[in-house]
Image 1 (tube, rainbow, N blue to C red):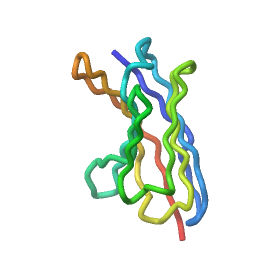
Image 2 (cartoon, rainbow, N blue to C red):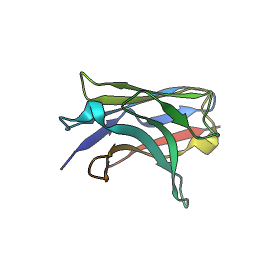
Image 3 (cartoon, rainbow, N blue to C red):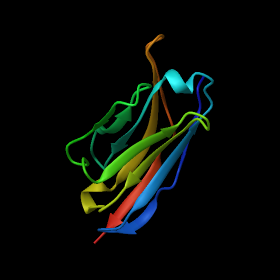
Image 4 (tube, rainbow, N blue to C red):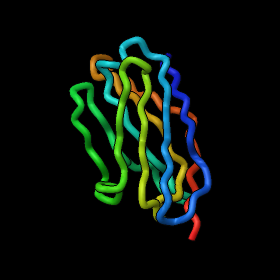
Length: 117
């Protein structure tokens, strides 16, 4: 069972920045797809960004150009740099890891990001 632990959430004013981090207990981290999803109050969980083992990055249109996903395979971590935050970015952000060979997905407990006016 893979465990994912997020950190870095908090309260920030609109226009500000935050960096989220997630550490995974996964020996095959370097060949897994990792990413971030978010769930706003009353909303469904939605994709924010993913990064494959081959370093292909994908972003939701709403965050493209403002958020950057990165991974460190030596430390089993995935980060999300969030700039120019908007009120609509307020959500619980979840770290995600996908193992293609077993078709298994794993999620962290989530970290809350609140953007105020």
